Length: 247
Image (tube, rainbow, N blue to C red; front, side, top):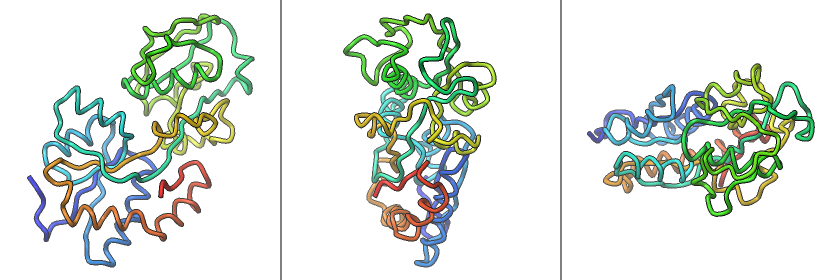
């Protein structure tokens, strides 16, 4: 059900630094009389399910491809709205400082959700560790690995657990929100998506709303508060380039 005007606008987000930015936006919105409540979820499936059910009004945690995949898989009536932040992922390792040093038979870890698994495989391909079938793109799965010269073992792990996996694997693909929480610096990644220009759409997050709510003035007002100069300044100062404003 849609929230009434006297109740806070409920905005969903995955746990981590994205919520810090939304809370800063809520402070800006409050100055204009709009109350917003930021609700953190523990995994990537929950914010869209809650949005579809009407338990929240808006969410901000995903890129367009993840949303499109969930709409296709689950029949959600959700739409992408404005862009929010750039959150490039990277290939991280505790054991190696160069891709060339990764030994034969090593374990590598990727996210276990379809679009981000493909995104990870593409970055591993860019690093020269794998070769995918030419036409797979963001639909790639581990079954589309055409060449694996080092015979790497590919483990699919929940995205939130990927930083912890670095104790057990040679390299893991970690997105910026979880990298930030784990104290991983994008500057120390073996390879970052920022070095792959065509990857930009895959790490640009968007706001999403139910299709029947996309023109709600309160939703538009909150997004305007988010995409304001004070919030941009907050992102730049707090995250020092790991997470960047997309406006």
